[in-house]
Length: 353
Image 1: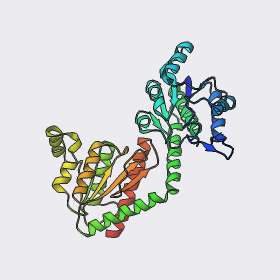
Image 2 (image 1 turned 135 degrees about the vertical axis):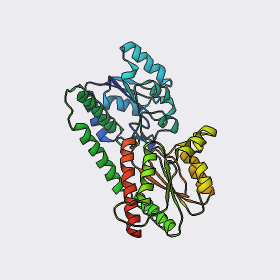
Image 3 (image 1 turned 180 degrees about the vertical axis):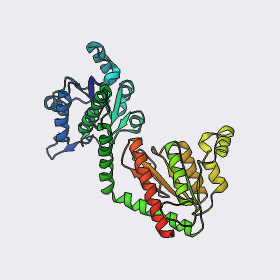
Image 4 (image 1 turned 30 degrees about the vertical axis):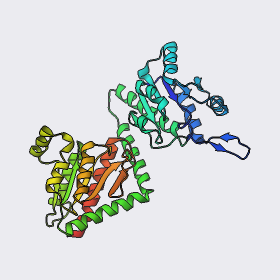
């Protein structure tokens, strides 16, 4: 359960940018739904706090408008300040949700039970948070936090029941629906997906091999993809050239044991890959070391590279076709990944049936 929710202001409740009019007056933009959501959080019986290193008319405005239970501005050592409050109010750190975006928030984020950051958070913050939101500061952060808290409370209620109901499953459907809606609006997503299909089709026409790799659930997706190409997806046809680099346990354990697990895919590409072959690398985070090394090895072999990943991925490379799922939830990302793999297989099969 959550007893206290702490919000930073600049970069969380606002986008972190100042607007200065011709009279030199500074202003910031907030989302109206954040104010409504802030009040809804308080109605849940959860204490609220605004904690910021800024101290000006804007922070005073937030104090007046949002009316938090606790308000402290102009503080540089946020964690020390939070510790004092915890001690005074006898609040358990594990029951605090903290939302921040900058380096001054790091110690608070590390020590609170639930850490959340907006999409614009610095990398040092994004890497340690439990949840990275899909919205930037000033664009509905409080609204997204409110939904998360409601889900936590709903799950706690569900666990206390003697019977299982369908609410969790319906929540998953709603989450996927939101992801699909975001994909539909993303022109680059379609562009990259179509480019991936074209590259694979061209490679097969030229007798090149389609390699795939991934870790954990993505390893299973890699083998699934290769199986659909070698055998069939929906229709009877000739086998298509595909190899999953996750499938040979002897090779993988040999490389992992004698060298390092980071090299399990790259080493195979060095031995098997050729110019204009294709590598489909699958990773929910986009930051797996062995995937990065596999991509580098494929580049050296002058292979074509497709990266199936999510918005967590920080890679920007013109030589790689990057297909990003607009979500931070690993399970939801994997579900969309397999849908995309099935789509690619369907397109390929229609070309070679």
